[in-house]
Image (cartoon, rainbow over all chains, first blue to last red; front, side, top):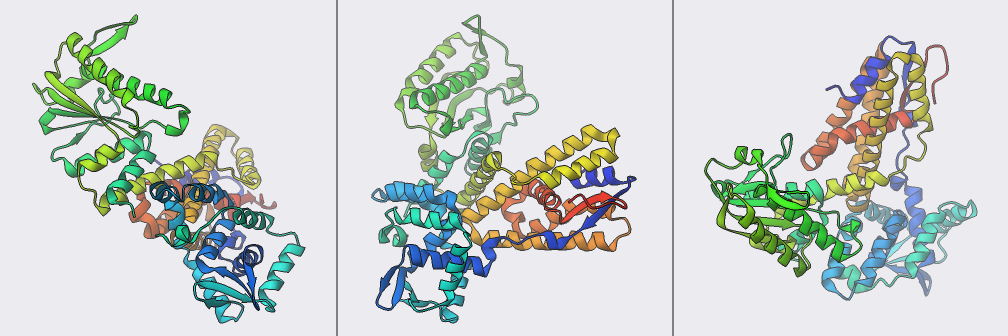
Length: 174
Length: 331
């Protein structure tokens, strides 16, 4: 049985069609865009992070979950369900199994954090990610995007996540 | 931490339809020596999905779509009805004008070894959280035995109803079993997601198909079929992307890299050829080869569809396409 491509090729054969290839039209996913990922981390720190001294801080495990869901807003229902069942270990495990596999194996997030730490925009402190309040790197990325009205969904998702109880037991109990 | 048995039971609960039956059969094949699955096509399965012990034990499966039932009562009824129907077929009975009467099941003689009768039948279902199914099924089985000619079932035959937990507990569950079941679960979730995926802007894809229709008015049906197949598989490829992205970011990155390699390779062949339409015919093969290298061992069974979907996506995004000679491209 011919494949769809073979059928297409046969249909085009003998016509005056002019096939073309524009590989540059193939846009990579924004999930692998450094600016976008930096924006999401900046947004998590600003919407959910707490100022402490000269830093804005957030638990690193929580940031890992927040940024993962912010980029996949359809998963928020799963987080709500997980939170609602958090006192029942069996149900909690079942409702969160695939979500946890997802955000725990998000290696790209680790690389972005490592980059931002190496660039001096973030610090790792005892299970926390901290951003100096006076740092301008992430602030500029965040403010430029907000000014341009970009990434509304991501910001709204992060704000919604702030209303869901996410405990240390949920994040560390694996 | 849940045990392998608990995880396996949970996966079995999430499988439905053919995926559930396939997993149950695969499970029996791995733990019951001589388990014989019975293909339903082309002549039907005669009511049995498998047998073992030389034809003395039979197995029937049912994996209803649980979300389709709002009340436990309707789900219980669906399960009871399905298993009663299977038992009627095995016992060669059929309702005629609301009266249960004997009716030859000709396929049974081509399924069980000659002269062999079933002495036990397991009825396996993906939801078993109500004892209210027991009485109707066991009572019906006893009634059917009285009415039946008993050509394929022993007079002392018994039945058991097993749910995911009972099946998972019957034998030890190893990692291989979990991986196999999770793959089926993943395939099923991709298919489910594909049903609700909306292709955001198929306009340029449609334009290319319209141009093809204008150039080949003698092939309108074939072009419509091709467009339909491409769109279906495009949705499947998008669903695969979404599911990997949700649960396996590492593999999603591999998919992203594969996509880049696919478009580069197809474009290189088309750009270097004096007959690019012939190279376009190899696009799916190229996509499948590249995807197989990354995903073949895990998701081999769905890569045909994903490869076709990826080619459709490239056409829709105008990375590859066609225009009229001397005219502008259809993008």
